[in-house]
Length: 145
Image (cartoon, rainbow, N blue to C red; front, side, top):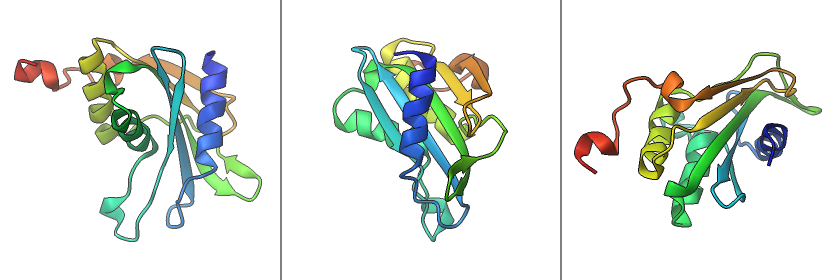
């Protein structure tokens, strides 16, 4: 699957975002080692602290299928929700919490995950390794696992 296809799958997932408070939809796609994909979208809650990010939803979904170690690549897209779809020109990247949760999967799988961060229209994409987004990460390796 190409980077563009991963981003398009994330955009499709973002259409299902439950974001009535921020009106900011985010979609995430995980490319698995076997070439399959797992998607997630953000899920807000009236108690803001209980909201879930798209990346966390996708990772929890992969974990529920016993596949947390199989994450090979990640794409994230986000923007303001409008009747026409997502809007906004800024590239969206995982928040700090999501970077930490992504690191869990990365360390368990022994990979420095490529993370593709896209603007709402997909016109601007920045790709990083997780180690660039979360240097000196703490994870399973620090616990002797």
